[in-house]
Structures are given as C-alpha cells and as structure tokens.
Length: 329
Length: 269
Image 1 (spheres, rainbow over the protein chains, first blue to last red):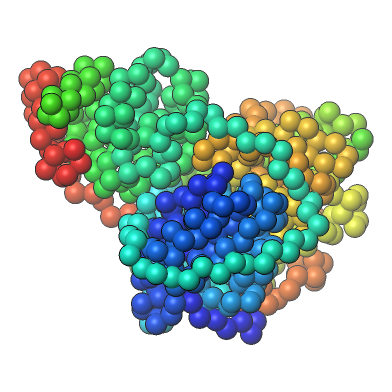
Image 2 (cartoon, rainbow over the protein chains, first blue to last red):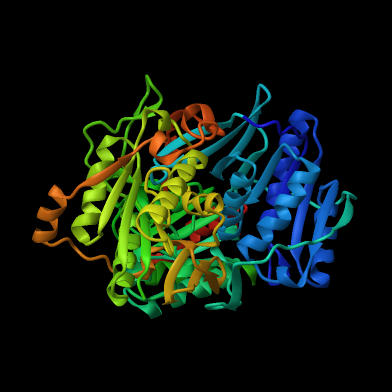
C-alpha cells in the first residue's frame, strides 16, 4: 500500500485572525490519550503570521504538546487551504507522525482532505470519540442525522481524523514543551484570500460554546430572540437557533444548530420554542444537559430534554433570568 | 464564454430515520425510498444557473455507486444537465472517501479530455447518510486543483476564475480561485428548480455512460475495500438518553425557580 511508518500524534491547531481556538486544547486531550495508549509523543502545529503565532505556540507547549511547530509567513495570515496544506504536508513528511488530529470545523475539514490525499491515507471525519483498541485507532462518529453511531478504524498510517468541537475536555496548562520555528516555503498558489466579514462579532460562537440558549419557530419574530439574548448574557452562553428561525430571517445563519448548520456538544443546551425536528436534534443531541421550554409537552424536544418546562417561552425565560439575577444578588 | 461544469451527485436514502440490523451491524437500506442526496440538488441548480448565463456551456453529471445510482444521474438530466456517467465497478465496492474521490477525479479528467476542458466541479456540502463533507476537498486534492468548501454564494464566475463566499464559524470569507477549481455549496446558495415533464421524459431515454476501473484507469491501491484507509465497523443506534424530568410549578416564576434549582445541582449556574 504505502511504506509510511511513523510515531506520534500531531494536533493541527486552528488560529483565526491571530487568535488560537480552544478546540486545539481539546485535540491535545485526545492526542494525550492516544499517545499514552501507544507510548508515543504528542505534538502540535500552528500556522499564521505575526507575533500571535509565537504566543499560540507557547500556549500549546504549556498545555501538553512536547514539540510545537510554529510556521510564520505573510501568506499564512488568513486561512487558505492550499497554503496551509502545503506547510502541513511538509511537517508530516518530515516529522512522520502516525496520527494527525484536526478540528471538525471548516478549517480542519478543508485541510484534512488535502492531507489525506497527499499521503493516500484514511480520514475519519467528525470523531466524537477516539480509542486505541488492540493497537488500532478507532474513531467513533455519528451519521444518518445522528441516528446511528459507527466505529471507524484505520488500516494504515498515517491516520487523519477531524474531531468535533467539545467532544473532549480542554487540556490544562502546566507542561513545558518546546517551540520550534518551522521554515515556510510555499508553492505558487492558485487561490487568494480577498476578505473576511464577521456577521455579528462580540457574540459567543455556538460551535465552541459550553452553554447555548437556542430559539426556534415558537419565538415568532426577530424580536423574539431578545429575552434569549438577555438570558444567554447572564449565563455566558452563545445564542443558537433552529433552521426554522434562520430561514424566517429572524437571526443569521451562523447561529443555526443542526444538520445544515453547526453541530454542537455543550454542557447546557436550552431549547426555547424548538419542537425538535430530527435535523435539529442531530446537531445537538450530544449535549450533556438539555432544557426544553415549550407549550407542547409532547413535542420531540420535550421528550429528549433532561429538564422539560411546559409553558410560554416569553414568560419562562424572563422569569428564569430574573431568578438567576436574584440568586446572584 | 463557454464553460464545462461537472456536478457530482450521490444516491442516498430519502429519509435518515433508518434502522440498524443488529445481526449484521449495518443500516437496513433495502426497500427504503432513495433519491439524490438533498444537498446535491443545490449543486445541480448552481451548475444550471451558471450554464444559463454563459451560452454554449455544458453540465456533466457524475455519480459513483452501484448500478442503481443511474436513477440520480437521470434526475439531474431531467433538471437540464447535458450528459451523465455512472462510475461503477465491482472493484470500487467498499471504497472510502479516499477511493471515491480518486474515482471521481479520474472521471473529471476523462470528461475534460474527451468532451471539453473542465472549468468547475460542484458538490453538495455533504451527504445525508455519511455526513462527512470530505469528498469535494479530496477530489480537488487528487486533481491538484484549488478548492473551497461550504460556499453560500458564487458572486462571479469568469473564464479564468471563480469568486466564492464560504461560511466559516465566525463569519464569511471571500476567496478567489483560478479555474479549474472544485467548490462545495450549501443550501443558502439557491432555490433548486423542479424537473419539467418533458425533461423527465427525455431523461428516461438519455444515454448514460458507464465507466469502470479500465475506462477510468483508477489505481487499485486506493480503491475498493483493499485500498481504503479506513474500515467502518459495526453500526449501532444512538443510545437513548435517560428519560427526563418535567419541571413542576403553578406559575412561570415557580417553574423558573425549580429549574434554577436543578441547574444549580448540575453545577450549571
């Protein structure tokens, strides 16, 4: 097949606009588990431009990456599939990790495909679990709108996997790894970055949020999200939405949770006025605690919920916000 | 400006409410209604819209799968695509995304050589069964072409480049790619049309090519079960969550208080 042989788990950290994504710390946790099972080291790679790359690399080294490859170049200031894939292909070719983990985000999914083909390797997408079983790496993932769980095992090295955000806890600081500057050489590029526009900055991103307050058709209008935003702010939560709310134009797409939106796994998911279409459930049924607030006690979301509250969202949500404020004094 | 656009489509179950056969550890798909993966309809529509804006353009459809995938190629032909090819061979059975994308890339190359140079390859964001969303990127990598996945709009397509807006988790990125290129699109991009009766009739009789390993010149070391880099194990239904608690209370305030107690117990407040 191929004669690749390698050792080590490489985590590809996502840094956007100079900021390291916390998903990288989750990859480190997964990598440490695999590394411990096989007696192999854990490494990380981070790409970008400017001083932020150094800071990101130092942070990865402090959270358990024994070696961190830091690639700094003007053409890496924004994510460009081709450029990033070229640098990472170089790192994998030279350092020969057995396993490469990437976040299951647009960044990680896009990059993983180019890397897998470069090494004619297997790629498991959207892992929610990773285990070494009899020496073999097995990724757990869901498919068929979250109805089915499958184990995907790797048949040869290198092994590439994208890991769902929030599937693993974040690795804490306290280690002292080594940062190595990676020399960047780029091929002629056939794509260019034009611009980035954040659609509403300042809000917590649903993908990496550990609490989400989400609204659906039951909110009735754009202003229906206002009480949810107030509650989310109190909880430090992100605001999510069902496809029905997004399609009605009440809230931008980036808030959409579900099969055609983001998949989330927060510790707390509060579904307000969301009946629970299968496509929505597929994107959030891995949440730890689910609260449903709905007038219909028999809707799928109320059946799925850890805590179901029957009632009017516009009465329950403000009452809960008031209760939390009262308890905090 | 005449462009040659290729759309890759997949035949999948029409519903994702599937049952797992506990004896085989596989999803029971026999007898279930199947059709074109819903996300692929947006790719077909986008290809047709680009064709309609550029006189002399053509749209080819590819589908890798068993003989029954012929039906989804005809669905695309009924909508207005010009020609189709089914990529099917016993040697392809058991291919993972590495193998499937290799087969598709070989077919794109063949279309480019035999029909007209290919400018753009379009995919839907992901399939409704496997849900990986990886095939577009891997196909681009095999071709050595630039690619962009999860695109909500193609504001400009010219003879030499495409401008694409991709949906990132934190906003929208605009990129320019030199053609030929590969793009996967999301449902935000358009509203797919329905086939006309005439289109359906014509599609029934249209010739669909069938290409196997010999016609495509695929590499056996990356296709089929033997070439796959990963192996799917037994499938199982998602374990059901423990049944929940209905929060008691007469008034919204009382319910809010009782819910807050529960959240505090769970250390969420």
